[in-house]
Image (cartoon, rainbow, N blue to C red; front, side, top):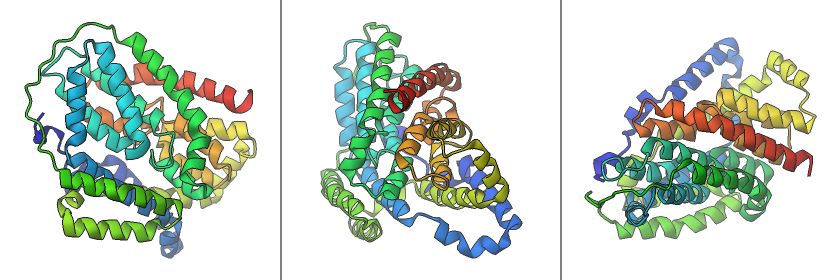
Length: 375
């Protein structure tokens, strides 16, 4: 796999092609026109510790990704697998595990290019495998406060430590991941595959790997200590001086998207009409919060849903369970779904995704409901 195959667009290209960003920006314009007096309050609507934590994690994980080591390791592991089922289980597990610490979108930027590269070197059903990797990062990232943006936001809200939050989310992650592994086992046939290592590997950058890993744990400690803003400034300065090319490759558009989501969702939550409609739903009932989180996620994605529901309930754990389950189902449930399918370069991927993701949503929502409200 050459470097061009895994490169991602420049920040300007990414911004121009990010339709979700433009939708959020257009919504903000409409909300501003409707209530211009709210304009001065916009900075106060953003959860800046969450934005700082997300920024630092994007920089550090981009450093790990660009070091080349994970791609090399993944390629070597794949080439040792005898069947498509073995490759699928391996990549689903890798995607799930990476998403717990490198966030779900970064895990996809590592695993999906490896998978796409298999089209030229093996008989693995690549599109189906990418779909399962998207489902895997949704399941795996549910475990930790840094696995996905909604957990990052809710962990800041809950004021829990990394380990306390992870312990609370462990049952959910297991409920999501175990059925997915079983589905993977039965979906892939176990056929022998033909593979060859004919690709040019990325150059390794040991210095970048060591720098990123050396800063990773201290940054997590700072997040745990509610010092994310100061820590991200330090990380940015270090990379600006030592590895500034990493900063040029960070998905800064994603930061803008989350800032817009905070402002839009909190403005909407303040609207009297929305307030009245949500009050009629009866969010004082935990079961209604659970189903509202899942259903609303299908319409506006799980991150803005978490922000929206947090305006009406302080039950962060229930919201976290609901919106993480809501990442399955329709493509809009999670931004990770969109990222994975855009990288698949296959028009049929959308149909394949929904053929598996909708049944997974039904099973997952039922199992999690039993865990929360029955057992």
